[in-house]
Image 1 (cartoon, rainbow, N blue to C red):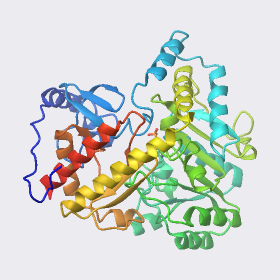
Image 2 (cartoon, rainbow, N blue to C red):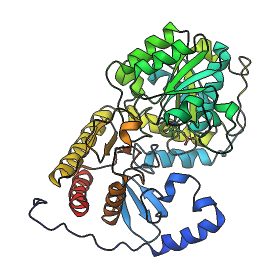
Image 3 (tube, protein in one colour):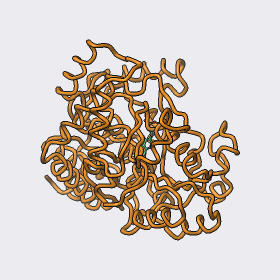
Image 4 (cartoon, rainbow, N blue to C red):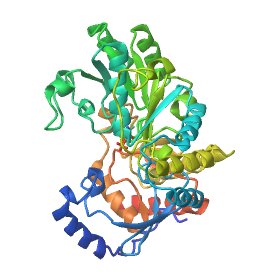
Length: 442
Ligand SMILES: *Cc1c(COP(=O)(O)O)cnc(C)c1O
């Protein structure tokens, strides 16, 4: 490869997105913002969203016939690659037996056994239909179990869109517990306390100021929803100590990191066991699933074993269970996480070297099949630091990569995901495209 400093950046062929544009124009008259989930609309990177037609392995094809190497993987589930033949075959078989039973099925036992065996904190599990549902249910559970109402979350961490979690950053807003979204009653967020990520002192102060009132602490053990931010040594351990000391529960939201950071999630990787864990994404293998689980004595509170009500018409449905089981079976095979770690680190190193060679500030990294970078000097320890990243330049980078056939999350504040389907050649091509794109936007 030639050095970016001596060669004019290779320009990308024009991307034809005519059909995507037509569909998006129509979609905007049919659905708010033209999408079913906000980040998909490309608002923060500019330009128009791409409508996908089909996905397979590491690739996505849009409605205009363009192919992209995909680093979103449906926002996490596609860790074995999109439409893995074994997952699809298992789904075909399950489909013939019906799509939903509304009655217990053996597949639930199988997926529960796999999850319990893999995730250190989980002794019992309840299946739901999304990560949002898992997080809102676990919050009800920690309040029911402790008889306390306040919770601590971290600025920039995302736990789905339930009212109680829609308190983000901004010290004054956070301290007062003001709703960040219209429609969220102040009374709902008044008990949501926030602290900066990686700041144990702030958590200590909250415990001191709210003695005997805090039900628990919930966090992403590795942050992926404020960009990619890792826990500093001692942070997770410190939260484990503090919650124990104050009779509060520790919840790891592993909806993103579960079965991605390692087979046992971030808790297995870092050796810190929370009381409860939420999951989603990977455990549904691309179908709608969430789950929460943890200590058996706490899970015994959940109806019908106990008094805490939580239910779901489609929960534990045979299709979602089947896709989850097959995905975990694939991930369980030897060498899986070594492979993911190797390609992701190579990609991350290549991205950072590419930016530096183009004279651009960058910081970032990877753990297992999750990576991220910020276009700023760093270090980025929390959401406040992350806000220093150059989001305008990220928008241009996103476009430059898209034009070259590489699909990154359309936000400077989302982690990237690799899969077992990404080949060495895909990674090489991606690094080369980053080098060109950095040169083009420098
Ligand atoms: C995606 C995500 C959620 C929400 O899950 P949905 O299935 O989108 O409702 C919750 N927590 C974390 C950490 C997530 O990444």
